Length: 393
Image 1 (cartoon, rainbow, N blue to C red):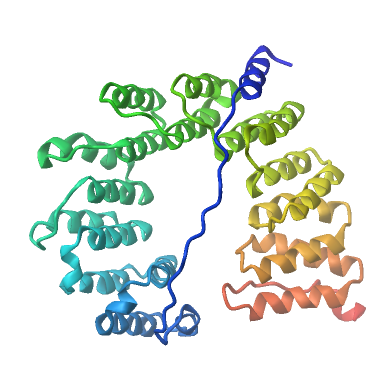
Image 2: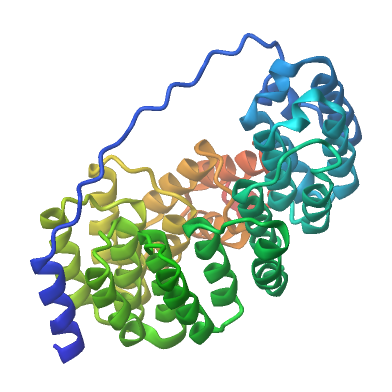
């Protein structure tokens, strides 16, 4: 084992993280008649947007339903119908709630989710005219919208210019967001300078700060690139969370150091942490990439036994190897789980499963997947049976 790996293991074995306890979020009941399912059934997007806008105009209760707004904006953004998004959200500037900063922040965030940073920026600039106060909360929302829209250099410029111009005191969230932006730009030295700057300004880095940096350094410089940051978390008394460990596991597995990754994985319980779905997926992918499908299956079973539900990353890692070794039943079962959970997966992988099912004369199962590809209500797949199916059925 390398010296770097040894130092890492010494750190994780002698450091206790604060256990994370799940909190319950109470969701208020809403008796408004329209639902996401109702809106989903409106195929024509112009009609969909018109119906949504009308409901927003009619009911302030409807306007408080964040989940239905997230769904609507995401659906229109996926279809590149940004003019419809603009039509819906610009209407909200006429409602009395716009004088509340939290309401304006919500619209800025929705524009950001849709990749419409110019619109988010315009609303931020208009807030004084709308009698809406601008504080660090809306400033941070603007930075976040820029990151989500991949306008990283503009995020950095705004961070440098606006606080003094608008008398806004930046906080840890502000720094975390701009550090994310400069990391995406590939400027790791500037990211570290921002880390030093926030400390100089009396702000304590959070686990999010360090996880953002770890992710960037591991991706650009490999496992050794993030080792110093791992130690700095102890120096700054920052408790690592499961994402911190998952990033380390990914870096180790990507470099083929599965044995060291397993040791780090075993440390989780002593740190008061439980592995999550990503933790299991890291090992499924690692073993499958090495062609060791049996170990990949063991980790898949461990994932299920832990109460987690496989996702599209599980599917993408495991299915090619299952098909390669002829494990059609498991590939078929995993494919059906993707449809049941409405995960959008690579069409080519679904077709691979179908082809393998046909090759092994499992025609009923192959036809079931083709039919699911046509009849599901979240995405349409262009799946087909093998040309020789008619001869076999």
